[in-house]
Every structure is written in structure tokens, then in C-alpha cells.
Length: 233
Image (cartoon, rainbow, N blue to C red; front, top):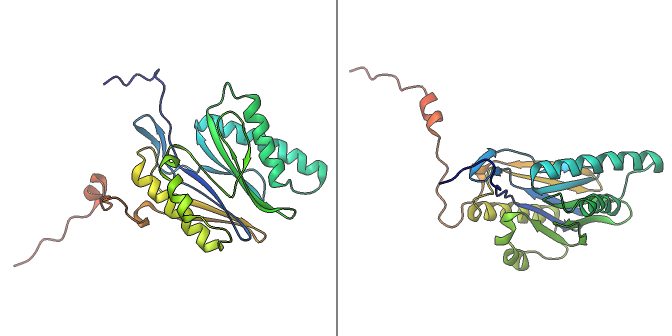
């Protein structure tokens, strides 16, 4: 098996954005992979752009991070000039502008979600190439291939905040079960008129699917466990 570092590496993830009645829920797994090697098992793929807008990142970690950094800088200047927070649409279009103008050099798909006082909760999908599509829900990354049918059946208009978050966590756990490039923990971000709430779901608390094996202690955990006291007869 040739594992040359110069070969193109597959990079996978699962990112999701869902609107509900009053805001949006963003979710993602936490596995950063470089081919078959898991470079980071607890990364945070949901990045803050402004106080009220976040972006889910997939594809090349370096590409998505630099796009996020540029857009965050531009939005900061925009907020200072206008004297008020940028809308979700403005933030998403700035992401689209950077992605489209550099489409020949970037390998990243993004989902922008947030809440503003003018239009409420909004989700925008910005896939490879810099297209922008406003959607009631958006899914991306390698794990999304396993979720389109699930979302067609499970998503509905007018969900509550709890229903939307449960849908996102369930969908990410399904993708983790099927997609080898998705894994780790599930992180969610809820954005509405009350602000932002971040939640964390450890991998061993997720529902098991498709005959998945129960979580097991690693060899290091077993070796570090103190040996039982000897029995006295």
C-alpha cells in the first residue's frame, strides 16, 4: 500500500444547518482526517463570524479556515461602518464572494447560518465553486451522501428548537455510523433572538446504528487503570 505524503488526500466530514420556528441549529462531527489518518478527533468545525452568524466548514481545513478569517475581518469592518451587526445574508454573500473569486484554488464547502432582526433565522449553502443557495436546511461533507433521504423524510416546517437540535444530532450520528471520514463527537450551535447556545455530545452518548459496536476502553485506558487489591485468604 502506497502512503506517499505527496498523494492527494481524501478529507471528509459531516456538517448540517437547519432552520426552525425562531432560529437555526448548526451541527457537525469533529473528525479531521488526512486520508486514512485521523489528524484531530475533537476539532471544532463550527466557526463564529459575528455575534449572530456562524459557519460550518467542510473540505480542506486550511482553505475553510482562511476563508472564515477573511470574512470575519470584512464583517468586523462592515459592522464598524454601519454601527450595527451584519445580517446573515450579508455574511453569506461575503463568504460566497471569497469562495467564488478563488474557486480554482479552494477545496471547501460551507454552510452559513444565523439570526438577524430583519429576516430571522436563515441558512445558506455555499458548495464548491462559490454558488450560494438559501435553503430551509443544508447538509455538506462526505457524510451528507447518507443523509439526503433521511432529511427528505424527517425535516418539517415549524419545528421547535428542541426538535431541530434532536434532528441535527440524530443526523450527524447516522453519518458517523456510515461514513468512515466522520466521527468523534457532535457539536451544535443554536442561534436565535436570545443569543447563541453551544452544546456538546460525546461520542459514547450517541445512539448506535447499523449494528455499531459499543464504545470500548482503549488499551491505554486499561493499562492506566489501577490493578485490584490482592485478596486475602
